Amino acid sequence: GIPLEHVSSAKYLGVTFTSDLRWNTHISNITNKANRTLGFIRRNLQIKNDKLKTTAYNTLVRPQLEYASSIWDPHTISNITKIEKVQRTAARYVTNRWRKRSSVGDMLQQLRWHSLAERREQQRLFLMYKIHHGLVAVNSSHQYAKPVTRATRSLHSEAYQLPYSANTF
Image (cartoon, rainbow, N blue to C red):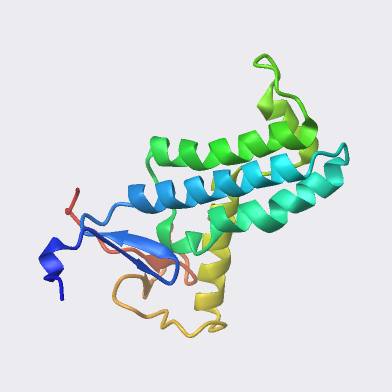
């Protein structure tokens, strides 16, 4: 086999992990795949029906951008932008507005699509709710997120205390 110190990335359950613990490779992989799928839809679903095009995007493309996002949610502007760009292209396709001067923000509002960053935040909150209430098999008293033992003015009995880490990459 290959010595582990020579492995720069590995895919596990559809998520690409890298030796530097950054998400750039994973996000490039998923956005490339999502863009290819969106291109396939655009080539093969040339109709005027916005609802059908939205359904195609929501069913075939968006799940590729959101799979396991509670794990890999990016914090760098470049990665967030790369993911949002796929949805912005999809909004242009669904509304059939390709002019440079067309406002994609207006299109997203018209379609009532939340940003993918907002959707990832909601998913993280749903997951935390499920962990806190014992709805998933994750121990909420794990050392990385401990329930607050003493309520203060800024922390209530349902709050979690995150550990401090001086490690930065």
